[in-house]
Image 1 (cartoon, rainbow, N blue to C red):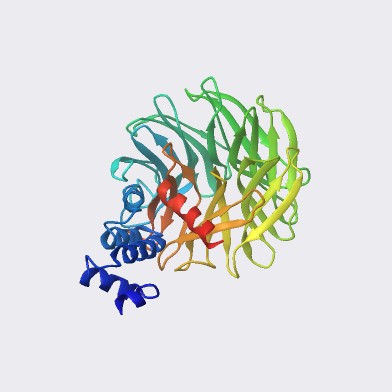
Image 2 (tube, rainbow, N blue to C red; image 1 turned 30 degrees about the horizontal axis):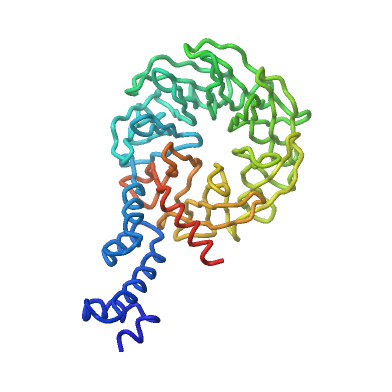
Amino acid sequence: MYYERANTDIYYADKYVNLFPKGKYISDIKNIIDNYYWKKCQDLNSCKIYIKKVSYGKHIKQAKEILKNTWFKTYGGSKKDELWVHSFVETKDGYVLAGYSKSYTNGAWDGWIFKIDKNGNKLWQNHFGGKKNDEFNGIVATDDGFMISGWTQIRKNNIDGWILKIDQKGNKIWENKYGGDKEDYLGDILYLRNNRYISVGNFHSHNIEYGFLLNFYSNGKTINKKFLKRSGNKKNSFSSIYRDKNNLFLIGYSIKSTKNGWIVKMDKNENILWNRVYKSSKYEKLYNMIKAKNGYLVVGIHNKDNRDGLIMKIDNKGNQIWKKTYGGDKIDGLSSIIQIDNGYLVAGGTFSKGNGKCDVWLMKIDENGNKIWEKTFGGRGIDFTWGLFKDKEGNLIIPATTASYGSGDEDAWIIKISKELLKKWDEDTKAIK
């Protein structure tokens, strides 16, 4: 009876192995059990069950690798601690993350930076700021430490862009502020060449908000500043920089009657090659991009009836080839994109899918923007990410913010997905097809 029912009911397959360990059909039954629990192995808990239930399984080595290199960990104190847009850099012995903290602060909140090892154990942390609000948005490694971009509040309605250099233990080497008497920000930061760095954001002057580009040396000395805008548009801002060979792409938005996605392409000497706005009926904001076949893929948020995740393909001259939206009947957005084997991974936050109010949202797409698979991560609260990175071993790092887990109102949340689990998700998708 147990053998006959084992093909359709795992309960009887498990019973057969326990009752008849040397039974006539034991090899067949073990294969049934192995395939059943391996198919279920989609996350940490289900892969732990596979190892426990099928210690003899043919996938046991891969399952153990998944458990070794896949983990979720939170960082923060009793209050609100978040990771922001370009908050990750990899070192030889771990990862460094930047954001802001209300738990560790000299004022309202401070720019916050911490280092973890490859297993997620915290090695050190520090925070910087004054009596008002301060925030880190981007980080890049230097020869002797790290360069961080963000903003610092001087007084009410007066914010300056902020560059801070620290050593490898998180101690400040120097800091500079850039701004006027209004609100000015710096977002992403990038190393160029010959000890030169570039950061982008926005800068207010004479009632116009310009896209701001800052070029400076590793010692903090300014090389030049550029203030960019679209003709007739009073609000313009950059959030990201993407480098492709000898070209730079500045990514953000520009507002006239509606908020539109905006990309500026420059050569290596920062001469503008083209300047494109992608018009929307209501709201569109672009966050990141990557090189693709015969062009580039760009991600962001698009609002027509409700806000959806946006993926757009443009050619080398900035012409739109296609535009697709993703999501449900609530608010969804995409903020990051990276290339992996046979496709691309995109990430953001979704109110339409998942377990809670908002979940971290991860999708794999092909060259044409077709969804291959998607995953969500989160609990009952609001959980989201602005970043997506692949480390040198091929594992996926998602710096996120969670209100579902941890010890505070919101905690920094690192999601590490092993390359073995990414591979399995691909294999499972192919098997279904």
